[in-house]
Image (tube, rainbow, N blue to C red):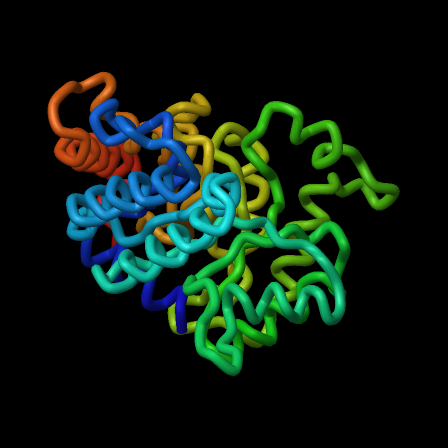
Length: 298
């Protein structure tokens, strides 16, 4: 099962981290941006940068998270870059999380599921192992994705408690039964995953739980014993290793922590080659997390 495989890779590497390829053209070194005049040139430069990142990180991190908005902004050339980035990462043995936060119902949700998690008449359209989804349309918006997951050994991460400053405007509201909205969404994610748990006890339905809200994360970790967490917020958004330890179970299992700008733009602070700086930043992050979590084991 996909989360079993990811957990085994995390244990092997002793690294519960994910490098976010949320690659803006502006993040690239000046020499890589020089002469870019159109979408095609920008997409080619981003792909070259991404491949350099993947080459230097593939033996350090178990996964990459590729945020599709940065690629959609470059039009058709950008979508091609997204596909090639995901495919290259998988070739290098990395798990690929497509961060697209898809949300719809019925036939439309089924098409999204086929695009990111399925295999149509012509093969995989947008190759990914895992996909972020928005569950706020209810079960109608999740079940088509879950069916695709079961068919092709994929997984999803449902937005539960996000890391952004305004998340509490909705997610922390209290319902009539006393639960917060984020607790309700977490309970739904746990229920959607019933019957799909692998040998480590986690289902195919994970949850996005921001490290910037450690008390909420502590509530959710206890409440959702079969739900694997994707944890944004480390680094540029302000969370540190001590804050995110509540997202994990004993043994350091139960989640994977994303870092995008802290790795992508590491060369801007460290100097030198962008790939070498990214690798150093990823190694520092691993040491930081493992210093808090300890040895990762089943």
